[in-house]
Amino acid sequence: MLVLAALEGRKLEPDFNYPQHSARVTSWDVNIYFDWLLALIAGPVEIIATGEYTIDGTRYTFTGQYTRVVDPVTANTLARTLRGSTQTIWFDPTDPQVASWQPLGYRQILLYAGVGWAALLVGLVPIAMSMSGGRKRAAALASDEGIQADADYNKGVAALEAKQYKVAIASFDKVLKGGGDSVLVHKYRARAYYALNDLDGALKAINGAIRVEPQDRTLYLQRIKLHLKRDDLEGAVRDLSRALELQKDDDDYDLYIERARLYERWNNFGMAMNDYNTALKLRPDGHIVYLYKAQLLEKRELHREALEAYEAYLYSGLADERGDAADVEARIKTMYTKGWR
Image (tube, rainbow, N blue to C red; front, side):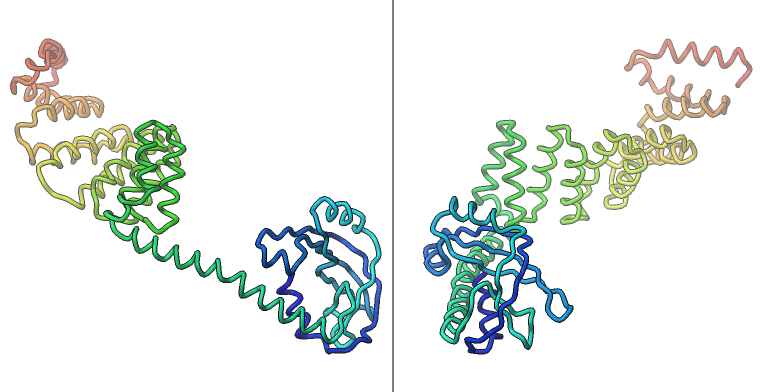
């Protein structure tokens, strides 16, 4: 309001003879100033009123301080009587949009303008201090060491361990807002959301971690679990493929098997078989793959190839270790009987 008064004060000419006009009050509001300086300047309670008026066929709307009141109760009581009432305004004939609920003279204009800009500067001080504090915190949260020393972060970790998941999420959110855009924070948030069975929230949190560290294959592997929980086979296959692109080593054996199983569920049998064969190349002693291949080939009615895979699994000795040798032998005999050799 004081800023508005300052702007008005700069526009209005120092003249006591501004014309009056009637305006219909369309709305009102009550401002309470808790800052002692603003309270001293503005009231401490002021009523803000919006009025509509027409001059020379043009309709104008003006919002400004209607009056100052000592306490909020009195202000609200008075303000309720204003809506729909007709009140007097003073306006600048050269620019009727510039108006006031009180007559303004030379001294009042200078006072409103000077005080208004002073109030604006005073109001900017805490904002500037807040921004300065925010920059300091952001600098402190720019490293993992700084994040791990942060009070909100430690509160979030403690809440997570205590299974107070909503408190943990709120604490980690404060770290993020403060500038701690860390994989560690996003992963902890994902854990909290997952514990609450909020799969969408967990997925968004993991997405945030991947945005920060797009080359971390473990994040894609964690996101696969969420995709499967959400019955998103395509997303799970996509993340498995990305994880395989990021790293090539013997550990990929299990990933190729997992992706092959997903391809099977997705009814993409050709890609599943390719992944089974790749897994066997990586680890020729991975005899369980023969069983998976045999089952897939049998589904596709490729009986001779299925029989060979069943025999390879049986003769590897793994069937005896797993305790399903008798079942596999019976399956092989059935296939012999049907002439699928």
